[in-house]
Image (cartoon, rainbow, N blue to C red; front, side):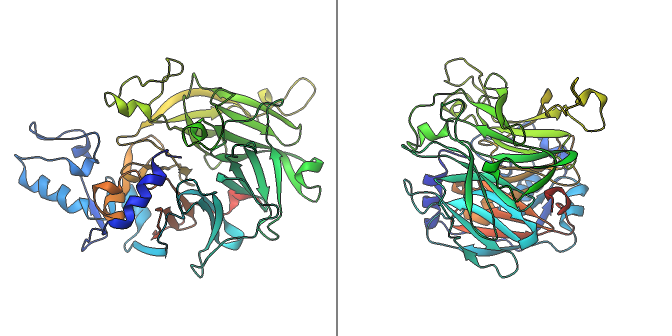
Amino acid sequence: MKIVLFLLVILMSHLTAAQSNQTVISIPSAYTYLLPSDYQGNASLGFLNTQTPSNASLNALLATARSTPLISFAPIFLDILGPSPTVTVAAQRSTPFATEGGIWVPGRNEVWFTGSGTVGDPITVSVLNLDTLAVTVPDLNPPLVNPNGGYYYDGRVYFTLLGNETVAGGVAQVDPNTNKTSILLNSYFGIPFNGPDDAVVVVVPGDNHQNNPSLNNDTTINGETYIFFTDPDYTQALNIRPAAALPNAVWRFNMKDQSVQPVISRNDIRTPNGIKTNLNNTKIYITDGTQDFQSGPFRGAGTGGGVGLGFPAVWQYDLSSSSSSSSSSSSDGRTNPPHPINKRLFALARNDIPDGIQVDDFGNVWTSEGEGVVVRDEGGKVIGLLNAEAILGGEAALSVIANFALAGDKLVVLGGEKIFIVGLGKVVLGQGRFGG
């Protein structure tokens, strides 16, 4: 979530999208770290806005790239795009209706997302049908209070809830076939969460078991199921919730044992935002959405009181639990819950904060950042970019794309007033990881 997002997308209605005669342009990766000595870069603008006065051909290449939707920095990204990638507008409104979520429901071939028409309006859930491109608003029963991010698994759409001044935030599930909702959690021993932002479901294989009554007894899940979710304090800045009563953290909800515990503190990640795992649930990635560093030097310490000083980064952890590991079982034979260990810096956002995040089946990490949707390989190298400046128009488009979805061979971009679909050359996210 970006605090400035709602204001920026309203301004976008007055901009005209830049035009380009091509869809993809390649920039040698060496230019990302070695430029002519007189180069002029600016941290508040994208890399493509860099000027190279002494190198006219490079200057022209970057100028052309600014109006090109897809930027490749490595052959692997061209392989993902295929020979004929497409960028089309799937839906458009006069107000910013598509800002967060980006949850692919493969069995229905839908993307569920959230957004609101203007600042202060309740946030609602909408659904994009990828076959017909129709956008509908499901009649959720009962309605959810300010849903934000989430995940799909085994017949349920899981949403994080920001809550409001009188209703605490938490995590809820939706049956996409009936639109019936239920709240899974909304407190830590009577203390409300700050405003859960994003979630991912992790399943440790094991024996079948029934959910507890609050999770609908008609659902059987193989193994132990956990929901990891981020809980930053954005809601206070947005005047959605009262002052935070808990420190920012990443939490783990055990759906079988009916327990919720913090697993990453604000001393490790100051403002945990987006969260997703790789295909085999062996690694978990969290974006740090700390924003106040921008009030000072580009990589300044921020103004957050000196606790857990953060910066706009993507962090990678190993998940400790594995059903095949002898160390994953406790003395009484129970499976130990997966726990994030071995923290390491995976990436640094060049412009604005990393927000939404997805990890494809090949280990590539996709994040929404100021420049658009940035794609990195499993080692952290930037291999490609969906260029926000080109598809949304002008430098003011930076920071507008807060979230997106990967859906088979498609990238679905939530651009505020517009939803874009990028047709890729291969399936990057299959149905297998999402259960039945």
